[in-house]
Image (cartoon, rainbow, N blue to C red; front, side, top):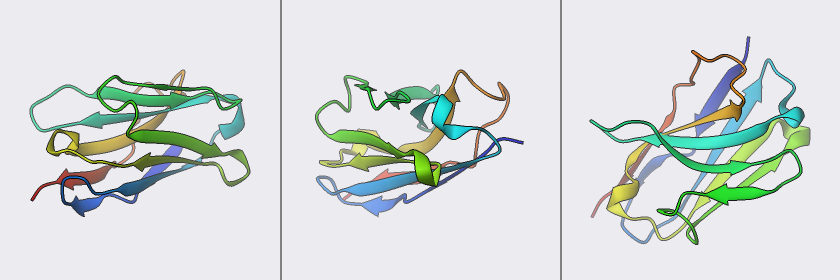
Length: 116
């Protein structure tokens, strides 16, 4: 069974930084594009960033220039370095594959709260 464990979230002040991790198991991590999503209370899940198997990256306009996605295939782990955090970045952050290995599975996510 595919499993993702997101970690690294927390409470930070505006302008601060966090580094999120996504540890994957139950699938061949290296053959999939990986993505970060986030979901704020009362809002739909939003795509944040993606990284292909060979390291090509894409970002939502809302985070471009502030967030950096990366992956370590040897560790089956993906990262999201988040700098210059804003209150609107507050959300639960999730990771997943593209395409979805299991269309109905999402990990527990990790809470990011940006507040003064």
